[in-house]
Amino acid sequence: MLSYTEEVKHALENNLPVVALETTIISHGMPYPQNIETAKRVEKMIRANGAVPATIGIMNGKIKIGLTEQELQEFATNPSVEKVSRRDFAYILATGKTGATTVAGTMIAAGLAGIKVFATGGIGGVHREGEITWDVSADLTELAQTDVAVVCAGAKSILDIGRTLEYLETHGVPVVGYRCGEFPSFYSRESGYQVDFRLDTPEEIASLMQTKWQLGLKGGLVIANPVPEADALDHNEIEQVIKQALQEAKTKNITGKKVTPFLLEKVKQLTGGKSLETNISLVKHNAEVAAKIAAAFCRKHT
Ligand code: PSU
Ligand code: MN
Image (tube, rainbow, N blue to C red; front, side):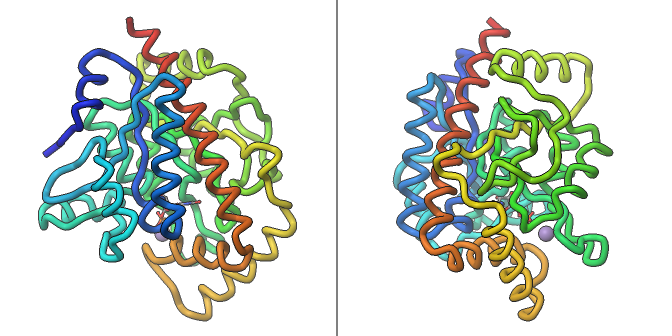
C-alpha cells in the first residue's frame, strides 16, 4: 500500500535524512496559489539543508511517500480532496479517494515508512470549550503512540493551549522548545505557557529522540520552533481575530473535522494577507530545523 518516489526510496534505503510533510496544510490550510508555492519552497528548503522531503498523501488506494509536482498540484487545486486523520485513513485508502493527511494522518504514514522527523505549521489540540464539546484533535492521540518527532511553531490559539499541554503531559509526549523556553502560539512567539524542556541544538534533540525510543517509550515528540521574530504577529491583535472567528463558528454551528479549516480560513480573511505571510515563513523555518534534526538523527545511526 506504500508507494515511494525514487528519491525518497533511495534515501530511506541508504539511511539518508528524510523529512515528512503533510498535505492538509496544502489542501485545507492555505489558498491557491500560495499553497503550491509554499509546498515547493518547503521541499527546496529541506533539500538545501541536507535532507530529502517526503510529502505524504493518499491517492488511488496508495499511501504516497513523496509526491511528484503534478500530484502536489492536484492536492493544491482539487476541492474534493478529503481531510484524512486517523479515523478517515482506512476509508479513504479503501475507496481509492484522494486524501490530504493531517498531522495525525501523516504521522501514521511516516511511521509505516520509517521516517522519524516531520515538519508542519501547527499541531491540532484541545479546542477552546473542549471540556463541553469534547473536540480534541486526533493529532494528540497520535503523538501519544507513533514514533515521529513533529517540528511545529506550537499550536494556534484557536485552541486551548493549556489543556493541549496537559493532555500531552498525561500521554507522555515531551514538548521541547528549540532555542525557546516559552511554548509558541504559531503566529506569535508567546503563549503564556512554558515548554517542558529547552534544547538548543539539533544534536541534542536527536539524542533525546534516540534515548526515548531506545527505552521503548513509544510515541512522538513535539519540537516547538517559534516563528522568526521579523514575521511574528502581535499576540493581542491575533487574539481579537481569533475570538471573532470562534464566535462565527459557534453561530454557524460548525462541528467535527470542519472546525479547524473553518477557523484557519476565517483568521486568514480577518487578518488579510498578513497571517498568510507569517504562516509561510514559519513553515519554511520548521522545514529547515527539521532537516537539521533529521541529519543529526541519521548521523547517530551510521
Ligand atoms: N493548525 C494549523 N494549520 C493547519 C492545521 C492545524 O495551524 O493546517 C491542520 C493540520 O493538518 C492538523 C489539522 O493536523 O489541521 C488538525 O485538524 P483537527 O483539529 O480536525 O484534528
Ligand atoms: Mn476536531
